[in-house]
Length: 455
Ligand SMILES: Cc1cc2nc3c(=O)[nH]c(=O)nc-3n(C[C@H](O)[C@H](O)[C@H](O)COP(=O)(O)OP(=O)(O)OC[C@H]3O[C@@H](n4cnc5c(N)ncnc54)[C@H](O)[C@@H]3O)c2cc1C
Image (tube, rainbow, N blue to C red; front, side):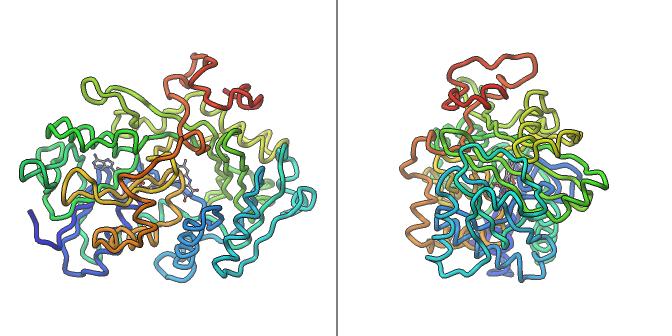
């Protein structure tokens, strides 16, 4: 075991890297090691955090995430390390619930002045040169327009901050972790074992392994004979499709300064869909609405959802049916304007979900020295600058009670039916040539004509 000030962080996504960044600044002489299966500057990575772009916003109906989003955004806007990666384009959020008012109320309660308002549909349609005039406004109450939100160049930002950590003294090891190492009759976690048989040891082991977390805990439970290491129903790995189109000159002229677009639905109607403004390569991106598990046997007799076993999670192998999900997203934002766009660069992105959408930033109850910082639940990127601050507070037992309860390993977990983004489909039902049968896998959206048609 290492000294008290030794930290081993498994996973170099936003949770892991932010933790390393805050630790090394607080304790410049500590031993801080990140281990990840992919090099931080690899051309392709499995991390959800590694992406062309992600929405950066504080537009939350949950006041805790609203506050956290504002705190992170302030860093994005002012700190020279983060600033180059934030694009304050604004957000155009089509709301079918009271979401807009709830966000506005939260800004007020937090005493935050910002250029945000809720607009009636007809007024909103005319904004931004009418870019969203052909969007689907069925059942829409109003449109939230927040000029202070925007997007982050996710992969570039992740690489830059990881590089900064390394410059500050963090060690980066590229290796696949296959199991936790336990000592003291299984009571204490002292490190990890890698696929090459190497042991890495530290006083604190922090799992920031994203969608792979439940599988790693299953493998560790099997390998150590300690079943209470398992995540059970606390964490579910879910996949979502993204797709991009490269805009031609005419379209780029119109869309270059667009805001982030969001189609918000109610939990009974389905997850929200997003459209992100063009990158420097003029590529406009969407994410789809079909969020799925990949349930399979990971150790004998244990069936859980985990990303596909391939080294790259088979993330570039996207079925025609999932590509359809992106075509649907295009239509509900741009109608005929997007009709001729060629869809390219499809990817399946995997994240770890809890049924409340809350993170887990907590000691693991089964072993001393073991901690979990994960479960972005499809919204974790925007908090990148500040996540590590809270992980360090958790490590030191200083997390505010409200956050300690919200992000606990053990807590009451709500019915996933209330969380629209919770994975409801199975990947095996979404491969080409397979009809999705009416029944369990269609979950609660069977009554939605547009979803039935799409799937
Ligand atoms: C399609 C999509 C769109 C999203 N859009 C947004 C958005 O607009 N805004 C937003 O704020 N959030 C968004 N999110 C959510 C956000 O991307 C995630 O919540 C966040 O990036 C999760 O970060 P993480 O550090 O937990 O996991 P990851 O970024 O997935 O990192 C986990 C790391 O652990 C490593 N790892 C795992 N297992 C092992 C092992 N056994 N050995 C070694 N290394 C291992 C992986 O290689 C990976 O690098 C989106 C997510 C998806 C999927």
